[in-house]
Image (cartoon, rainbow, N blue to C red):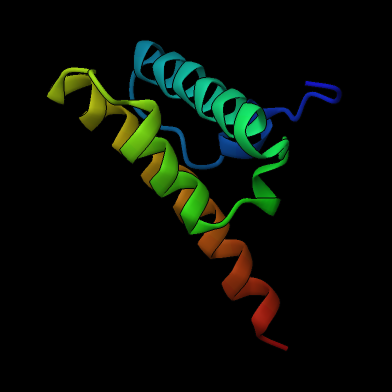
Length: 93
């Protein structure tokens, strides 16, 4: 990727739980970011749409165990929550 977007800074307000859980979410968010970059050349989550996250779940995780898919789904939920908060904030005066 040409410019690295700081996923930790992006997700820090939503991360809770143990340090291991936080590290796992950040590692998975970086993997999601890399896969989306490889497919669409989008590095910044603010430019992602639902189709990008759905593509990751339906294509990039083929052959992974249900437990792994579930853990990635939890990370995608955090990313979607962050994006949704921004959308709601910008739509109100």
